[in-house]
Image 1: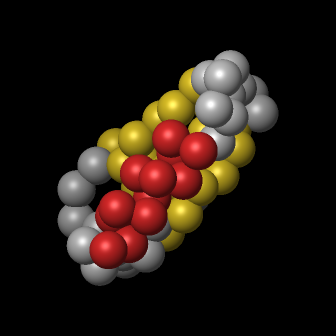
Image 2: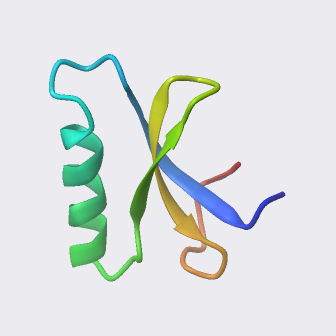
Length: 61
């Protein structure tokens, strides 16, 4: 466990690039979650994450 919760995954091959992930993260920040977007090179995905202590639910990565 590395201390983060993955809220959502977005394909890096999306024609809009990271925008869908950034928009999702922005919406979560509006809800009070400290969401951020990171790139997972191994899976070629943008991950919207909350670092340890920022959320109660989701998939732990």
